[in-house]
Every structure is written in C-alpha cells, then in structure tokens.
Amino acid sequence: MSDHTADAHPVSDYRGAESSRTHLLSAGGDHDVDLPAFFAECRRRGDILAEDLHDRLGVPRTVAMTTAASGLRDFDGPVYSAVGYDAVASVLRDDQGFDTRLTLRAHEPFLGRTVFALEGEEHRAHRGLVMSAFSRKAVDAWEREVIEPLARDSVAALRAGGRREADLLADFVFAFPGRVITALLGEPPVPLDVLMGAATAMVTFSEPERAVRASRTLYDWIAEMVDRRRHGEGAAAGGADLISRLLRAQVEGARLTDEEIIVFVRQLYPAGFDTTFRALGNAVVGLLTTGQWQLVVDDPELVPQAVEEALRWETSVTGVPRYAVRDVEVCGTVIPAGSAVLCFTGSANHDERYWPNPQRYDLTRATRVNATFGFGIHRCLGLVLARREMAAALHALRDHLPGLRLRPGSDDELRVRGLGFRQPAAIPVLFDALPR
Image (cartoon, rainbow, N blue to C red; front, side, top):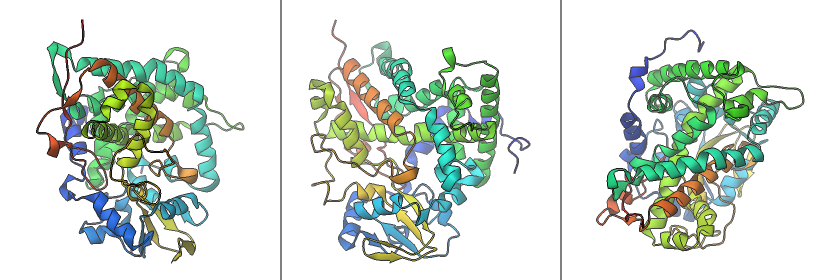
C-alpha cells in the first residue's frame, strides 16, 4: 500500500471540531458499566484470569476495550486477562516472553510501523532516535514557551464576554492538548479542527476504510510539513519544533528517514491529544467531586501529586494487549505460547494491595509507580509531556478561574464512563469574576 499514490479525502470531509468531539467523547459510552467494581470482582478471583473479559462483559471484540482489541477480531488462540498489578507489570516488563504483534497487526494498516509496536533492535534504534528529540532541555523549553502560555490563553478564553460558567471538557480540556501538539510540531497545512477530524477518523477502527483514507490524508499533510522543515520553512526559531528536532536526531551515526518521521508524527496527533484530554478531564473531575480542588488552590505545590493520583485513579485507556512468544509463568499461571494477554492497566491501578480504598481519588495518598504509562521497553514515550500538560492546565485553572466549582445537578454528566476509553460526558462548572 502506497501512502503517496492513494486518493485522500478532501479537507471538507474533516472540517468541524464538533464531529471529532462528539466521536471522542462518546467512545465506549455504548457499553456503560461500573468498570472499577467489575475489575474489583475480577481481582478477587486472581491476578490473571484464563478468559477474555470482553466475553464476561458481553462486548464484541471489535469494540476497543484495549487499545488494540481490533487485533483480536480474527484471533483464535487462548486469551488471558491480567488484572492484578503484579501480573500486568510482569507481562509488560517481559519483552523476551511477550511481544506487541497484536498491536502491530491491528494498527499497521492505519498507522504504519510505529515505534510503539516495533521489537528488538529495530525498536531500540528507532526509540533511541525519537527520544533524543525529547531531551529534558527541549521539554523544559516547550513547557515554558508553549505549554504554559497556551494553558493560560485557553483558560482566559473561557471568560470571554464576561462568562461565568463553562463546560470545561468541551470548552477547554478537549482542545488544549491538540493545540499543544500542533504548536510543538509546527503549523500544519490545514486548520487545527480539520487536522483533529482526520486524526480522529484515522483511529476509528470500527470503520476501517474511512480510517485508512484518513491515514493517507494525514500522511500527505505531514510529508508536506517535513519537506518544508527540511528546507527551513515554517520552523520555529532555531528549529526548536519537534519535526526539526527529529530531522536533526542522530544516534551512533544513524538518522530517521523521512518515512519514519512521517509515520511517527502521524501517530502523535491522536496520541498527543486523545489520551491526554481524557486524563486531564478525569483529573478535574477527581479534584472537584471530592472537594480536593481547594487543596490545590491553597497549595499549588500539590499539583504534581494531583496529576499522579489522577493518572492512577482513572486511566484514559483501559489496557493494552501482548502476545506470548513462549510459555511464560505469570503469578503462578502458565501462559502458553501463542496466547493473547490483555493487560488491564486500569485494573492494576486499583489493586487493593498497593492502594487502599483505590476507587477514591485522594491526592494525599503516598505516590507509587502506577501502570498507566506501561512498563518496560514499550513504556509510553510521551509520559513527561503528558504530565507537564496536565500540570500546566491545573495551574491555569487555579490562577485564572477563582471560585471554580461544579454546577449543581451535574452528577450524572461528571461520572467517568466508558470501556476502552474513560472520561466524563461533560464538566459543567461555575466561577467567579476576577478580582479588580
């Protein structure tokens, strides 16, 4: 399949952020269950279960309960479900016993051979090059020059026309991460709402033909951006944008090809705004519904703890799959070679042995490593960036929306829901006028 020769959808097919928002905010909502309670019952039966939890929930395998559930659509081998923290961590850390071929099989037609699903030397080399573009110095500069100003501007816009109420999810949380990733990569050849519409369509795995067309369209737009950056056009001052940094990346004499850069950036668009907006929305819900927002107002130094507890409390993505390449014993259960293991990170983060009363959002609890970003060599590349974005957003809300509180009667809208993807339906809030 050639990305260059395929017909692409016209821009008008992806115009309008409303369709993207509607799709993303409804993901998983058609299977609305009390997932934390369901996982708690599963953990009482063991760390790892010899069954596919899709079946117990009555969910077809075409529903993305895990990020690559579509990879199980035609899978006829044994399926196990890891629900305890130790089991999930053990599987994800064992890159010799388990690999990511299910993710690759599900995603390659849409996303290409991304670093998230490569293995062995190919993965090591590719990840090293990509990570060199995400240096601590670069991320610090992005936080100071891009993320924090965008957070302040986005929150300030909520006050336009003297407004004193908003739906934080639709009016701020949804678009903020998309604005950040676009600013980091540099201006695309199409408006942001069009870009987000195409990125959303690309990861709509239940509509494969539409997803493939959107993938090819994004490929062409990003190829144009890469070509312009290579010739010094459209780059940030000093080439500080991410595409320019990827073009310069070099490890042991090796460089990324344009194809590798395009495929990586194409994955960044949905990854950069989809999971982050859900995580940020869940953080706001956790703080406001438990009365702990006032702790952050009184002491902004608590923001990092608030972020970590939110990432643990409600993962934006419920889990990831792995494939057993050999017989492996996990928490006393032998997983035969050729099996799929669904690693439910959302369940692992509620393991009562590590987090007492895990269904409660509590930013004062002792922080320990949660499973949200995974473990091992495939741990999420964007974890530092996601944390910085969430922290900047919470600081901006604290500083620019005094008296931030929930609108009375909004309990049902605030309930975090979904299977593969978790977020509330809305976050209706009120706030006070700025002091003169």
